[in-house]
Amino acid sequence: SPEEVLKNIKVVFVIGGPGSGKGTQCERIVAKYGFTHLSTGDLLRAEVASGSARGKELTAIMEKGELVPLDTVLQLLKESMLAKAADSKGFLIDGYPREMEQGTRFENEVTPCQFALYFEVSDMTMTKRLMGRAETSGRVDDNEDTIKKRLKTFHDITTPVVDYYEKQGKLKKVSAEAGPAEVFTQVEGIFDEMLK
Ligand code: B4P
Image 1 (cartoon, rainbow, N blue to C red):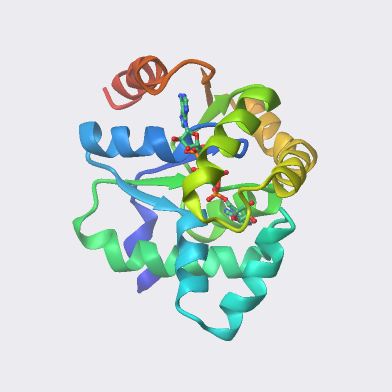
Image 2 (spheres, helix red, strand yellow):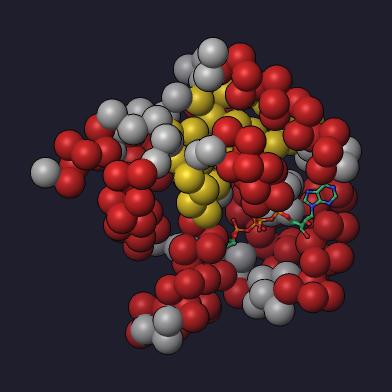
């Protein structure tokens, strides 16, 4: 069954505020360690681009800096994992879980994560990076107003997720204030240790 296929697959969650560098570091992790990268933000933007009715609702939520309903995200994630499971060494799930129930549902219905990688950065740095990206990204959520709301969503709703994995001893924290290469040095230390 589809569920069986995913039971034994290796999963690493990637958590961090908006603009913390999740997507940027995931590209480097894929290049070096050969994981399959799935960004829930990318999956949602692809759904929007498809022009579906569901996509139109998503744009409105993302423009407000709020979280898309759990069932929508989990469904997209499962479909995408199943499509790629056969030739995957493991999945990097980027931008997920963002609320407690996303984590517990995933771990009950798919598989427990090996560890959660957390990029810690100040709000000031995140805002600066996202305002920089706003100049070229064309993303509906890269503007000053929405960035403020995304930061609030992160602090209010995602912080408990970070605390939860920390208590479980599964949180691997990286200070992500520095440039991409320096941040990646810390990430390499964690992956080399965890994949030994
Ligand atoms: P995401 O697509 O996850 O957007 P993000 O948090 O901004 O992260 P991203 O990966 O794009 O940026 P990065 O930090 O790499 O989410 C967007 C929206 O989708 C959410 O607000 C929500 O509405 C919805 N959503 C997504 N997942 C969901 C879920 N699980 N449940 C519910 N809703 C969900 O990079 C940002 C910028 O910084 C880039 O320009 C980059 O070049 C730069 N940068 C990165 N690292 C740097 C460094 N070390 N130094 C300098 N610049 C750096």
